[in-house]
Image (tube, rainbow, N blue to C red):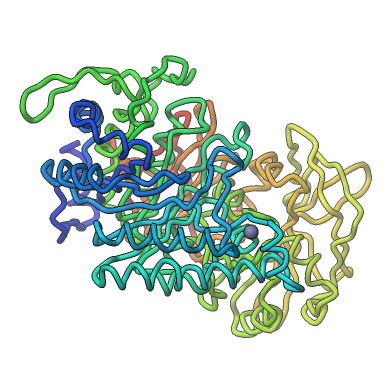
Amino acid sequence: MKKILTCLLIICGFMKVSAQQLSNYRNFEVSVYARAYEVRDMADPKKLEETWNLISQQVKIDKIYLETHRDQIIVPEKTLKSAISFFKSKGLKVAGGITYTINESNNFETFCFSNPEHRKKAKEIAEYTAKYFDEFILDDFFFTSCKCDLCIKAKGDMSWTDYRLKLMTEAARVLIIEPAKAVNPKVKIVIKYPNWYEHFQGLGFNLETEPGMFDGIYTGTETRDAVNSDQHLQPYESYLIIRYFNSIAPGRNGGGWVDPFGSNYLDRYAEQFWLTLFAKAPEITMFDYRSLQMPIRKESRATWQGTGTSFDFDAMMKPFKLKDGRTVQPTTIARAAGMTFEKVDQFLGLLGNPTGIKSYRPFHATGEDFLQNYLGMIGIPMELSSEFPSDGNMVLLTESAKFDPQLIQKIKDRLQSGKNVMITSGLLKALQDKGIADIVELKCTDRKALVTDFKTGWGRFSKSSQEILIPQITYLTNDSWEEISAIKGATGWPIVLRAQYSKANLYVLTIPDNFSDLYQYPPDVLNRIRSIVSRDLNVKIEGPSQVSLFCYDNGTFIVQSFLPEPVTVKVLVRSPAVKISDLLLDETIEAIALKPEFPVKDTVSYHSFEITIKPHSYKVFGIK
Ligand SMILES: [Zn+2]
């Protein structure tokens, strides 16, 4: 790893010297969260010493969150005090935590904030916590799913969304922030948001009001297994959600939060950590103190292990030496976390600020849920923001943008100032009777087509390996143009359509009915899509889906594969670069071809580099 650093200092002329005094890592802090159940057990000093030794010798930890309440369990004062002094004596920063659940195992039963007794209890817990901590965080559950008779009556004629947004904003102020600050004026209160941002408003998480009311926010980056776990979140979200929340609370998004649940193999656990860190999260919280004691199971060693992947199971299992000379034999999943942090910390400081194609989710919007993450999975570097992006040569708008009543005017303004816009078929459908025809007359019909054949240019055909169901979009001949087509039988429909308006183009991207069928688009189709959207970036990739690209503003970039087998992709870098460096291997890669598959229609030219990525692995590059 020393080689990497030397190499990078020369290549990038870029040196990260952290101003922060971090005890364990150069580029981030690592925290562990302890639930009220485990904090309560900390009354037993022998057990506490044992569990802490077990965890802390396998992963270096800077900070601990000690929870005071969960599921109506309140940790007694005496235990809380002794736990705080124990962790302080170990040199850790100590903060508090609250989970507002009545019974987590009953569909995450939350407090009822229409119920005076629950409200009283919520306030008391905030006050109690503020007494012992100068900082505390609210875990995932400061929302409400209650539909009791009190809530039904209080809601009246409002929608559940409107009622709960209002209710939780009021509860945050009256029951949490004001009472806690009355007890401890210094207390910093952080609200941690879970991973289901697209649905927050329906349960009262208010991204419009709360980030300004709390002292900080925090981000759930746990994406788990997309197929097995019911949320079906795409891995890319572990990165994108940090970027999104950074845009909502610039400089006040405290970090990302990962747990080991819902994944079949340990690579996925590690991957969530490093994706969070690729987004430049300043802190990682490991949930939780109990699960870090879970033994490493041999079943969680993935089939591709032993081939030199980014997460190396066998290397993780090897005994290692601590600074004090003791040898540790890894036994629990804490070591998977520890090894991941140590590896990422070697190069993270060499990356600049993340950049990508901007997308837009107005507050409380929903539509084509979580689609930006699927777009990240097909190799489009995404940035998601709560403000309409007026800069950049391209924005990519999905259906959720329809919640902005000024959207069509904003799209027109962009086009008239010479900046392109891409909208999805879902957004077209939402806007087609709401004024988009003023820009171009198109229709996303209710007819569907089941396709496997695609055309990306004259006589240029490719096939998907399985049938994809797409909506049929119709347009007026010579008014707009098929850039990419899907073919079935003797006819076809646009996959990307281009319509010129004023000084720029409006593009429409057809989204399959099953979003994950985006992954089935053949490389030729994906390459063309990437080429159209990527003109603001100096790097793009060509190849199959489920390979993501992470770009930074200092000429570094990361290519990550989520595929279960090795994959070879082309990296296209804007001229004049003719070399790139693999920063982890300290190797230089020369350009192999000067012509990309789809040169954009301006004067920009690219150099092409071929790289192979192992399963669930990443490579870090710098442009020479
Ligand atoms: Zn209720």
